[in-house]
Length: 601
Image 1 (spheres, rainbow, N blue to C red):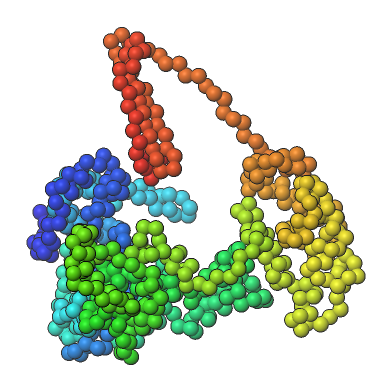
Image 2 (spheres, rainbow, N blue to C red; image 1 turned 180 degrees about the vertical axis):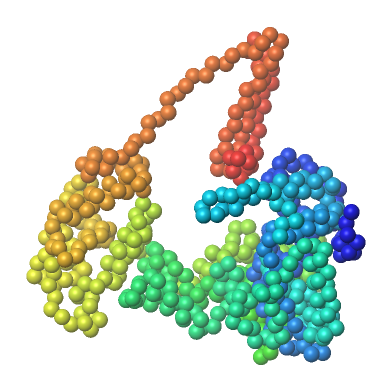
């Protein structure tokens, strides 16, 4: 029997799960299929719009942006302003009352049989504790183990925002309002079993956020930069450049922020990522399907079209950034008309259409009657694609086969990086150091020539012997290697170069790659004799021998069903044949079905 206060707390939960939903849930034979295939369709109905996680299409980024807008107006409210309460829920699986959880599911309208299946999953969890790298004990999980509205300048009210185990409450700063919130939280903890971690929770009374985890959460989401100050971006670039180069920085971070084929290291610059993220935010704003977009449209665009709203000094920084890119972003958005209510007032050069022609257009009956849908021009399905947006905002450079030829999956990144440095002349040879103003007497270790990159890797006698050896071994013309820099590392220290020493190290490296299965027999196709000469014993798997399977008859008067199936490229197939005791086919079947994995098939 539920506690009276628990029943009072869940009485306001609406019945949102229909009988058809319950039938679909119970039709799934396993819990995994139930969660993957059916429950995902019901989650948007029962999860609050203020919780953007765990639902397909709902991005935590929206809550982060919305929190920034609310914090921007923290001091703007009437009657002593607003207050933000950041609550951290204690991470303990079995602190939540399962009786409370089942009662919530019942209130939502889930069938009792389905609730029992979920309860069986919870009650059947057993745990062991690892102590000194050994598992100790084996015990089951159980429960017994030890407001006035926030004024944000818009008509869309946002009382709270949820971030996984964190929750932000927004309320008025009056004592009466705070007492109400405190009483509700105490009541919620007593009946649900959840506990608020007071050490990690905080109360913020000003838009001057403290430098702690809250600020970091509001800054970015899953590595996607929303907006940073120039100083922060500059410091991050310095740190990452130091990580790439170490103590000596050979080039600026911006020179590496290009694809491999354009001479970069496939990094992305903060400015370009930030602009692509703003394109995404503008597209979601124009869609108007999320809580954040509705809030922004109500707050800033209630009296005018989003393309015509002027920036005011009191507006938030995210809105100012969106206004700065709206002209470019809007050019990649077009509309699929439904009701035809979307505003095209931003389009320049529109022609006035005569009333009779307008009527003829409307008689075509091509409007579906559904809501107008914003489509992203650069994608095939109309959905926003971050990669296409990034490619549009970045400034491309000319591609080169020289750079694209040094980055392969079978070549280690370390080796490719060395070749890239050789091409860019980012190596500490004497000739490069001279250009940096460091003057000293130069002498190559193998001869009396000046140490240059060209001499070290190409023109000295030992390098020529190495290239001649391998070009002859693989039957490649030497002229190719004078124009395409496919170079191998030649490590040297205090000892002098020797032809045999370098050849031995190359052979040894190839043998290691073969033994660690980084080089497979398929990659030696056509050059298996070379692999044997280098001492790289490549394992060639034997083809599986064919086995003959004889069909045995069933007993007299019986039937036998033989079935088989396959899975490939997201498609599964199954077939079967029924025969009698004389071997005559009675019935045959075969079906195809889309599947995400062989296990699902």
